[in-house]
Length: 70
Image 1 (cartoon, rainbow, N blue to C red):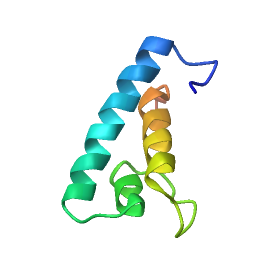
Image 2: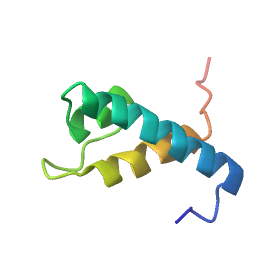
Image 3: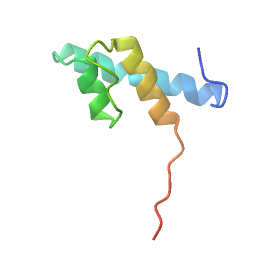
Image 4: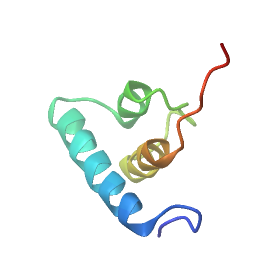
């Protein structure tokens, strides 16, 4: 299910990329928490699953970049 405020094409591409990254981390023996921390996403708890990690990573990829003040 894609969020309503994100372009559907961008969301599907982000989910595909997030799945690839999570699959690589899983293959190397990593955990969902490690996948989330690799993207700088806050880990919600020790029981976070792979589907939550994929969704949160995709949301972080679709988030607009914030400019920093000079």
